[in-house]
Image (cartoon, rainbow, N blue to C red; front, top):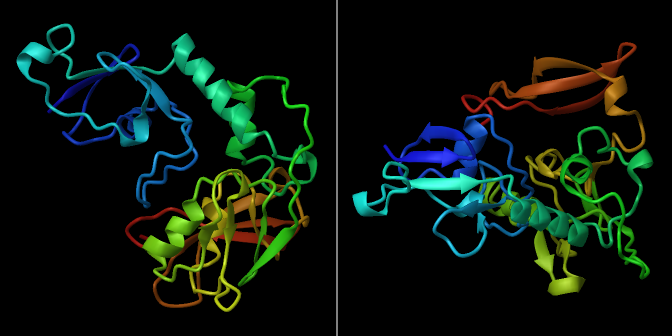
Amino acid sequence: MPLLKIDDREIEVAAGTTVLDAALADGIEIPYYCYHPALEIVGSCRMCMVEVEGMPKLQVSCNTRVGNAPPDKKVDGKYDMVVHTKTDTVKKEREHTLEFLLLNHPLDCPVCDQAGECLLQDYSFRYGQAHSRFEEEKRVRPVEDLGAGVVINQNRCIMCTRCTRFTTEISGTGELFVQQRGYHSKISILEDKPLDNLLAGNVTDICPVGALLSKDYIHRNRIWNLDRQPSVCQDCSVGCNVDIYHQNDEVFRISARENLEVNG
């Protein structure tokens, strides 16, 4: 098995394992947005960039795989790959990436339903800058109804495309797609094909920034006020695992709980 070194930690991994998967499995944090273990890797958000010894540029860790290096190519005579996640170059790259992602993002954390469990919020504190250099007017787009109890706040979207890949690869219905290109890109549906498949609510769970929202939870409560109770969905005999969020004997939200033996 290849021997991988991430910062000061040695890890033995199976050949073909990505650097990001190896790091996460060993408790090493590398920030990411577009990556999801159940979806195709696209490497588009650029948050997971790391330094790999022997490579001239930073690499996206979600799509950089560890293999068995020839004996004469091993680093320090024993490592098949050596990765650095905390160098000044990596830190600066994360700052720049977050700065671009936040150019048009509204400063609405106090009213955003994702606050308290938002990766954009968390990573901004850990890896971003305290102040923005952006002085121009932010792009403002209306909230759009996608169907099946889901709306999208286009101003919060960072185009990670988790949702479009979900409807293509998991539900197989393909309602969501990226409309236009570049600065004008946005997540859309066709007028005659709303987001109404049986798994549609999952897109709100996998959205990392609160752009996709469940209509029945918008502005109803704050996540830190709610108690979480693991449970099982009773809609059918599959027994999908869920988390029930409640307060004072009132249920406010039900979300999927990871259990690959059932939900997968």
